[in-house]
Structures are given as C-alpha cells and as structure tokens.
Length: 468
Image (cartoon, rainbow, N blue to C red; front, side):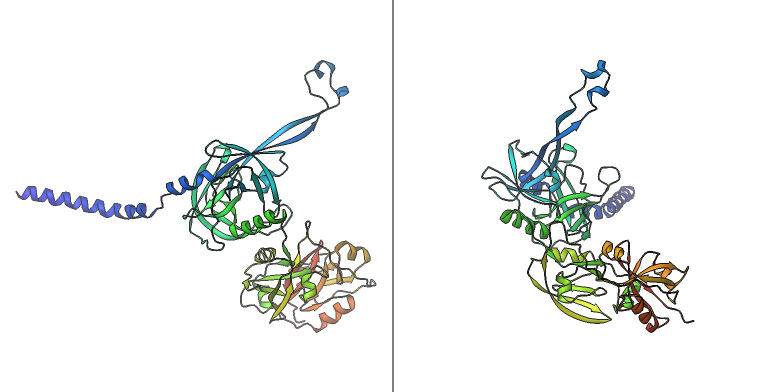
C-alpha cells in the first residue's frame, strides 16, 4: 500500500514539474494573435500588379557581322516587352487603388489581378516620385477595399502583417513587429520627405506597394523598400505611413499632383560639441548651414547658425525630422518656428513656400576684391573669394583657404585647402578684413562654432583657439 502511495506521489510530482515548465509557454501561446481572420477579411482587397513596358534595343550594324550569321540576328533596331510586378490594394469600392510609383513607372500596360482571379486594366490617376506612391483606377464597382488607420497611432513593438506577391508567389502573408518609426531614408534625388515605418516583416521583391496592417485590419503603411545585400529579406523593411499616404492620395485624386511645403534651408545634425556652442542642453534640432536667398526662411529672418528645435509645435529631434514636417505642411501656411540663436531661444513666424518639381538650390552671390592674408591663430592662410568660386558655389561672402597648418584648430575642425570659411563664432565672414577682425576678438580656450563650405556643401563644426 505504501509503495502504491509512493508511486502516486511521484507521478503527481512529475506532472507538477511538467506543468510548471510548460505553463509559461502555454501562456505565451495564448497571448499570440491569431492572424487568420485578419487575412481572410482583408486579402480580397489586395491585388497583384503586372506591368508591361516597351524597350528599344540596338545591335551591331549588319556590315560588322559575318554574312553567315546575319540571318540568325534581328534587325539593327528592335523593340521588346519588359515585364515587372508588384502589389497594391483597393481603397474604395469604385476601383481606386494604391501602389508604389516604382511599380508602375514607365509602364505602358498595367494589369490588376485579384485573389478570385479576376483581372482588370488599370490607368494611372497620378504618381508622386518623392513619396514613391501611385494612385490607379480600374473601371469596376462593388470592389472590396481597405480602411486606413489613423495617423501617428502606431507604436514600436506592435504586431504588423503584410500581404503581397513576393517573387511572384501570389498573395503571401508575413508578420513581424514595428522596429522603429520615423526613419529617414534619402531617395534617388537626395530628398527625404517620408518618415518611414521600419519593421522586421519579411518583405521581398513583389511586395512593393502592398499593405501593412495592424491587428485591427487597418492599413498603417504601404510597403516600399527593403535593406538587403542578397536581394531578399534580412529583416529590415520600410513602409510609407498613412500620415503621408492619405495626404498624397487625396492630392493625386483631386489634382493629379502633390504640392509640398518648402522652407529653403540646408540643414545638418547637431552633435554634442555643437549643442554646447549653441546653448542646447543636449544634441537635437536641425542646424541651418545655408539658406536659399529670398526663400521662405530667408524672408522670415532665419539665419545660418540657427538651430530649429520646433516646427509648427512639432519637436525636431534630428535634422531628418524637419523635411518630414515641412513637406507635410500646405504651401502658404504660416507656422511658428522655434530656434536657438546665439544661445537664446526665439520664435519666428514663417510662411511656407511651395517645393518645386526639381527642388530649390539657388543661393545668392556677391562681389569682393581679392586680397590675401598670412597665417593666424586658427592655423589657416586665406584670401578673398574670386568671381569664379562665388559663382560656382553661389556664395555671398567668405574667405578661401590657401593652406592649413597641421593639428591647428582649423585642421581639427576638418577645414581643408580650397574650403571657404563663412562664419567664426556667431559672426559672418564677408572678406579677409572681417575675418581678421572677428578672429582677433574671439575668446581663447572656448568651444566655438565654425561654418565653412567644402565642395559647395555648407558644414558646421567646432573649434577652440589656444592661448599663446
């Protein structure tokens, strides 16, 4: 009897240990979302997009090909079809749908295929290369469509799901979490107007233009890019957020184009040393390194050396945040811009301009007679700007660097021969005379900002003049 009791206790003990070990896993499994209903409800509104474009090719002239082979080759000039694919989704029952601009760019024919195998010819309503979005239309009614999530409600760590046709594998689903929000990625034109959603969802070629869902089945973004070295997913994918999508699509539907706000500044990040020189408690904001002459910022009184910390009540944490905020602002809107200038906080009202199709780059120029100067505590020899340099880099003033002493304050700040120094401390340099005067008055053993142009690009760094 005692033996049976002992065996029974042993079995109960083993069961208890087993339950103790698997209980956390059972709890975790119970907390994982079930994506089946989400996919069943929303997949019918997702489409596969096939495009065809005409491409011309050329061969060697017939005279350069041995006669015996000529009958095997095509004529000198020929035309062939190029095909590509992507994904998209309907946003209304009357046939409006969204995809990426790069999916349909240059396409002569666009065919939309649904999960029930129906196919439609689509036409382009409008495209926007800056956001990589395109609005298409098919002539059909009563189509399933998706709902957009409210902007700015997404959080890092949320579950998200993508549906698309990666590598031509139609209507595949993949899941992951939001890895980051507000990622700045420069496009092919060197512009940055999309605060991308970064996820670890498996996105591959063919997913472009497809929807990214939250657990409520709402679209939080349009899948657009991946970071890869192999051509396939390595866990870094990027989607255009609904805050951008809704604005762009509304404009494309209304007028076939997208108008963006424009400030007319060249900006850079603020590092720890620059933050100290400009009176900031920690690195942050967008440092204006240059302005477009007579642009919105210039007309409002903003200056090179100002650090923009807030734009229209939105905090600017990094320089990449500013173009996102400005681009989303309607042209003609008057907004308050909070800056730090010479360690003092100021608020300046700016009327936002319109970003042109090819951007705005013009900077003013001025005329000064060239002179020269000997070496100085900064460790540079300089001269006044010549006409060619002013015109080439569109400069208003400054001094050109002829030589830089090794390990001098200028060298440690990155200044090189041929660069143009435009500002020392908080004072602008117009010519050699002002350069000498300002340099003589600068405090020693104090961290100060220096602004210079290198190959036409404005740069802010810091330097310290040493006591003799």
